Length: 106
Image 1 (cartoon, rainbow, N blue to C red):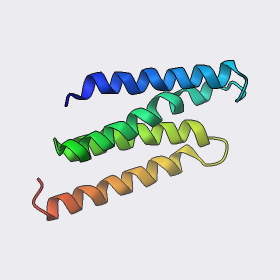
Image 2 (image 1 turned 90 degrees about the vertical axis):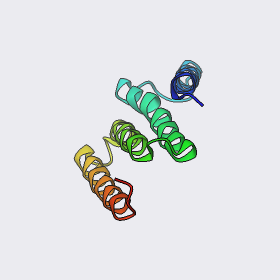
Image 3 (image 1 turned 30 degrees about the horizontal axis):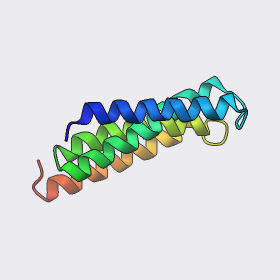
Image 4 (image 1 turned 45 degrees about the vertical axis):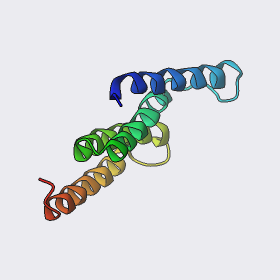
């Protein structure tokens, strides 16, 4: 299972849902939410890909978490300080790396 074609499909589906949501006036347009629409689903897919294929799971978990953090910062910037989200992601990544290292994963 290759990562690229499915990642492109996730991005295309996300753009389609975003166009429907904004075009039908289901949500008020906010350009600062566009990264959430793109990086949220792609980050979730990236993490899921790493878990399901077991191909470099830490690599995919790292980049997936970074994308999810960008999406969360973009979507929640009015409610939560983006630095808080980045800090939580950094702490979680360090814990995951330590657990992986303790299990002999690298």
